[in-house]
Image 1: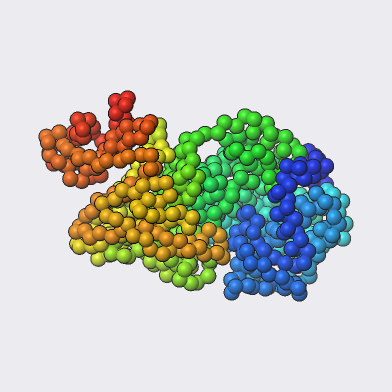
Image 2: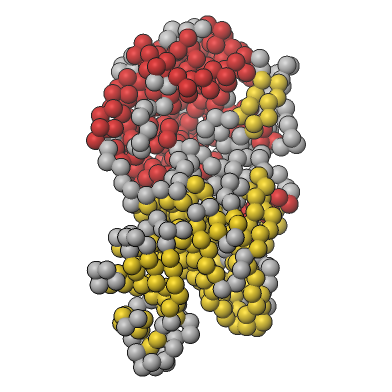
Length: 633
């Protein structure tokens, strides 16, 4: 035990880290200090960056009761019993060396040990998920307390006896399905880390051997080949990543076998970070600032691409890596070259992320994941000038209530509805009775031109319904959304775009974007949830139009510096191609012709002509200034 702890802290340098936090992380430390002051009085607000179910309403437990539930939501009690918030006391002691912080930290832990004596998998105090998180939190606390000589042998014995009981409990109630769940990873990583440092204090050899083999299965099963986590929620992707990441930090000999997976998962988090610096609230997720996690990841993986324009390492990274990490961060920062244009296509999960200077687009059309998945096929989010325009709905709560159901359904996403019917059927907080089946997702790009295509099938109508969506992005200046819906009979199509509450729609514009559409938009009320336990009133843009059997519709968004004019599309024999679309795009820097052929041409000549420009392809962009043709598909 002592050897491994000394090895871990060999390059930490307590004084160096204290000075760094006081001078470089002063503003962040003020937030930590506010949280500590609350905890000293048994007052709780769960507002740390990666709190799984935040609650911004303060509650005081004068008589500490670990089974307390507020807002009729057991998630509050789960958060209380995970003990992640106790790590703030370590930061506070590092900076101020106030013994009250350690006294209160120990008080919480030993109070829990003395009062939570019966373990049940359905208890608000000892669910296996929360037990895994708590064990990992305790381990990190134990390491610091031993290194700083703040834990006596009697206290260590009591802590280890409780850890033994908790790990035995995890093994007793481990379920097969955890191989495909964040619940499993949050247990196996805790067991492995505890064994690494406390093997001489715990009798968990069998649990360790199981956890090592099971973690390998978990990573192979639930982390897809493109680095995304199968559950279709950025928050739970992060929870899995963070557990594995911290395990490798604590147990560095595991890095060689896991580094490749960590790298892919980290870069997915980076690409899911919008131009606002926060994640899309995709699936059961909130909007989270990713800087602290990505900066710490850059140190472990020695990857400067995971850095951004932030000037320093956050407290999270300081506590994990100490002085060595701070010094390495500075070196990586010097070598970092920021990219203004990046994109990524995650084929296994059907996600597309496009980053252009000051703009960001996320598109989703992929298989359902876990119960954390939302009905968001063919939906997208758009940020322009670093401001959110169209956003994901978020989750709000896990309780059984209508707003939870609405936020999960297509009613709360930027997509299409036929006859006002969502392509899904949400029947509970964790259940669907029907879900739209993805057909395919495709992405092509060349220079500043991006083409996305996705299609899904819905069984929610008398006849099968297919929605195909095509999105063309021209750099950071124009976005073209083309929807094709096929459903036999007479129907009504509703196309909707969920606005961020800060976005302003007026006179056919939203923020700095002009809107071009054959059918005018109206504004309807909507709700979004940027953080668990919070609802924000917003609006959505909606247009309605009838169709028989099939409809092809378009909506264009372009900055006010860009002019767009619709053009006719002809076959080379002079026949007007009714379902062909073409647009002339002009501003001070560009003069382009965008040509889209949504349907296959099976009658007449196959060559397409627009303004004497001849093309063959589904999506082509012709640069009239350079006479260069870009055939994206």
